[in-house]
Each structure stands twice: as C-alpha cells, then as structure tokens.
Image 1 (cartoon, rainbow, N blue to C red):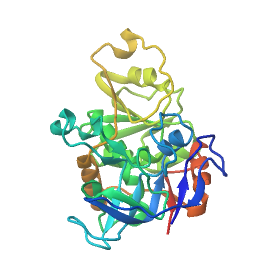
Image 2 (image 1 turned 90 degrees about the vertical axis):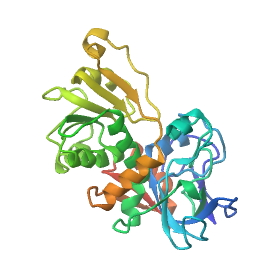
Image 3 (image 1 turned 180 degrees about the horizontal axis):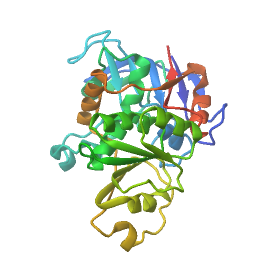
Image 4 (image 1 turned 30 degrees about the vertical axis):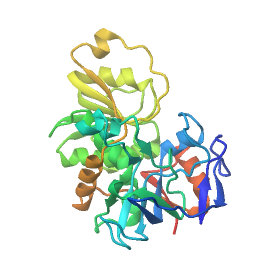
Length: 331
C-alpha cells in the first residue's frame, strides 16, 4: 500500500517533509481491526509533529489521526464494510488511576494515532476495535473526518471552560476546531465572540453567527463568561484571562503553545479566574460529539486535497489559507 512517511522532520513546504512510499500493509493483533481509509483530516498537530515542535516518540511515522474508512474484516463490535472513525486517542492502559477515574485522556501509557503508531495518511490503518467510532449515517466521510480531532478537542475544551447554557463565550483563533466549537456553543444558546487575525477566518466566523469579531489586539465589547484558546500563541493567555469576568474560565485547546508571558495577578488572575489546559480527549467526548453531529447540530466546512498533495495541505494550514478544515482524500 502507499503511505505518507515522516522520517526526517523539517519545515513544511509543498514538497516536504513527508514522503510518499510503498509500505507493507498493517497486520492486526488480537482485538485490532484494519480499516481501508477513505478520508483523513489534516490537522495543525500534524504540523507540530512534522516540524518536531513536540517530542517525537517514533520515527519514521505515518501521520494522520482524523480517519474515516471501512472495516476490512469484522471483529466483535464491527462487521466488514462498517464505516468507522479513528481519533487521536489510539489506546490506553486501562489499569492506571486515571483510566479508573474515567480520565483516560490523562493515561501516562496512552498511545496516539499518527504519533506513537502509524496513522491515516495511508491507504490502510489498524486500530484497537474498542477505540474505533461508528460514524452516523447522516454524515459524509468528508464531513465526519474533522470531527475526530478538531471537533472532539474543541468540544472537550468547551467542557474544560465550564461553558453553560446562555453564556458569553470567546473563541481565540478560528481554524478547524473553532468552526465546530462555535456550532456546539450556539446549540447551548451561547453568544460567541471571536478573536482571530485572518480576514478569511473573520468572514467565516461572522457567517457562522459570531456576534462580534476582532483582532488579537482588540478586546471583546463586554466581559466574557468563558474563553477557549485555539491559537497556539502564548501571548493570548494573559489577554484572554483579562477578558473573562471574575469567576470565569479560560481553557486552552492547544497541544503545543509558544511561551506564555508573565501574568499580572491583580488584573488577569485575581477574582477566582481559572486557567486550564485541554489534554487529548476521552472516547465519551467523541461519542457525545458524533451524536450531536448525527442530529444535524454540526456542519463541517472542508477543503479537500488529493492524496498526492499531503504536504501542500499542511502548508496551506500553516499559512492560514484554509477556511474550516482541510481533508486528505485517500480514495
């Protein structure tokens, strides 16, 4: 089969650093299934991996963790031909304190798709059957793919920010995750303000119902109840903390972030304001989000790239040229 391989990390260009190669088909172990990939979402996390901006546990590696495809051979949960999704969380130990508490996203022995194990920039991929998701029939492959990371992490970040019905929510950055999160927030009756630098992103945010859109140097017109940081820009953390009311919460959805400047206690943290990170997601998060999407609450906006254009897709994301989500059409 063919797969995109990262062997030597480097800058994202239209020609690299990923290389398209012929590789052996995945061989499933007990409890695993093999999936013939239809579509794989392209994610900013893949850029962090390709450029070694986060520690890399394995090279070479096939990136990609927003995978939609068909089961080649049935197992206990799925039959051959069933449509399934694979997300960032590939497997956990199931035996540690975090797993027992239901915090499997915090499992120190967790392994992640396209990071510890080969992912979906390939014609076929294997996954523990227990960590595959059934895809609602109302969603196309292309619509479903971004939900499996961009959607799940945005959904969990809203939960980490303690967002409640009818609140005022600020979204910092408006890429793949945020364009899904705004729809979840609207389904809760929330008013949404968007802070983003790109003109195309501002246009999309307004079209998707944001009440106000501004740049990173602007303050929202009123205090926020909650804020979610999607942009991996540490300098936005103090600004977001200052923008929320006393008792408000700021949650970061980033897996990697540039250095955070010093925080002024009196103006940015005092008043029982809370700052949280969002670390991966649980299977329950994914199931809840896919159920919402299956009900028609969420519509993803996608830009497709042919299978031979994986590097170009990542370059387009890095250059902020994509509205919504980019997806790789494998077949």
